[in-house]
Image (cartoon, rainbow, N blue to C red; front, side, top):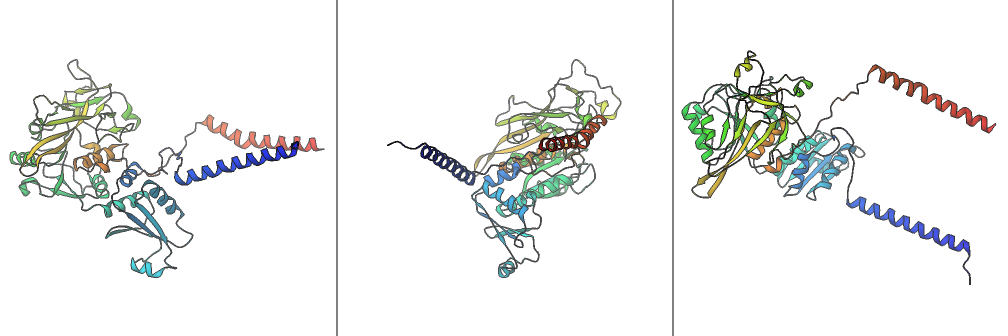
Length: 454
């Protein structure tokens, strides 16, 4: 009995259809299990930031988000919450219509549509903006047991956290608070010691010398396991240099010059503003690969381990090969000539060092204090804090010092204004193609079709 050709064709078509349906079903199954999106924007503005991914990855407790929105609204937030939930099985969310469930809205004291409640255990935080930055900060607030305290030293001409001008540190303070640190100030001469609740002591660009007893306070604090962050500008002698050398940190009396001209491209100065993108392997710099940082008027800082027991250090960031360590400090006042002498060190030049120091404790044995020293304080001031990786470098250093490595990251990006600049010739070409050539081609095609049909 011969099988008809029609039956064979039909069978083949049936099998091909089944095969295609099986492929579609498999793709749908994989798509439901594995969420994949491509963000083609220049700054990856529609992808979760590295900071958010790190926080979600390290969630130890369940976090729930209740979004009180009218039915049919909040699609932007829904998409954002889906991204969060794909990153952690401990993140959950629910949309609640206050009109349909007034009792639930009353339980959470909801007074307006668009209120978002973030919960973890008995802690909750309300936010009113559907942005990644607000949502991630709220998660941090509810999952952390308590906020660590960062103290900024004052009394020696340091930059102030309350100063909102170009030379202040209000941007740094705000960023630390958004990372859920408490930020306070301390005058050591008045306090008599570093406060007991200090998690990180920041010395931001002093211009006057520390008193001998103040140096002893800082030294004792570190020897007891305290963590400190020093930002020391060139042309200053603040009395902390000898203390830092005890742990292998050599703060040189020079100013780093960079003649690559990269800084001028960004309109931030001349050779006194070295640009760095060369980072050594360290938790602080792990997320900074490929991101530039700027250091207006910086001195070199080196790590020298020789003869230092119980000390480990890393030179975090270095300038380009087009730089050198200028020893003629008159260039800081615009008097000297920027010219490399044969005895001056050539780049790459290190600008920052991080060290760990083994210290003895009576009850818990050996503990390691952490110290970071930068040869510049301007990079973290308000004027330069938003530039490229400057702000992230500062905050990540504090995170490492506070032993909050899971917070080391690149923070959420904000959409910027990115116009397309065209030359006169490019604009003319675009005009002719879009306004003349393309419409003409459509018209010609239409005429040809009409003629052929006739």
